[in-house]
Image 1 (tube, protein in one colour):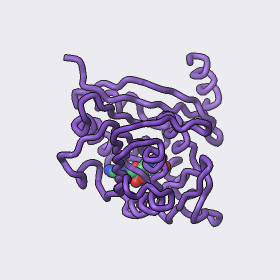
Image 2 (cartoon, rainbow, N blue to C red):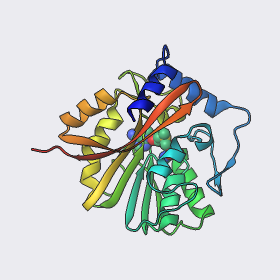
Image 3 (tube, rainbow, N blue to C red):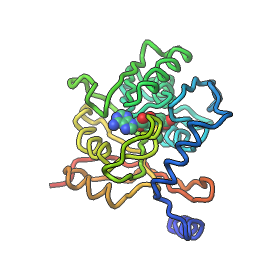
Image 4 (cartoon, rainbow, N blue to C red):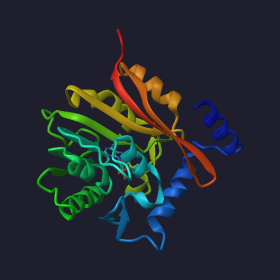
Length: 250
Ligand SMILES: C[S@@+](CC[C@H](N)C(=O)[O-])C[C@H]1O[C@@H](n2cnc3c(N)ncnc32)[C@H](O)[C@@H]1O
């Protein structure tokens, strides 16, 4: 791990990995490129992709999120129980959860096009009876009484200045102004769990880990690193992390 960290630091030397403007430029490129398809193939399946929705083909994040959950290229680890995927985008992770055996999946997003997109992919893959796509700003639009065995968010981990306003709904997949959404996830994910359930955040070194840890502490939470993977992304080497959010020890 130490070795990989050193390699990442030397690859990234002189480049600001956490630059939010770089991420907004990536967002604009992914949103507007002329060859952006209306469907794509990934993990042996075809998926719908609507305009304005985060495209799993232009970033490794979705694939890494799937790998972190045990749904790799080779194996679809069986999973039972319920899943809340916050920030579902195309719904690829939520739908894969249903295909892996989850009997109840809620796929939510602040981007209405993503909600529609997740619905389309649930129908396309025959799991619309188990996947409910819901428009929700973090937990606001969800049934406050419902509890889940797994709450997962593959987040917009790049920190933008607190006053930043999104130029498009698509940008909400890339940056989080002032980490306001992250603070709400840290504070609220645990309250949505069944006893023994787990709240997981897929974050990366494009984000501000120190700020995230400090926010978690302010919200009475601790973060445990469950998985880490270094991935070349263009000219950068990025570390992806699967973090579990747990109550802080008293
Ligand atoms: C990196 S994308 C991940 C999309 C999808 N899960 C995937 O892996 O392909 C982050 C997602 O979080 C959503 N998001 C950002 N802020 C949110 C909020 N406050 N409430 C709900 N979803 C949010 C974005 O719209 C985007 O779809």
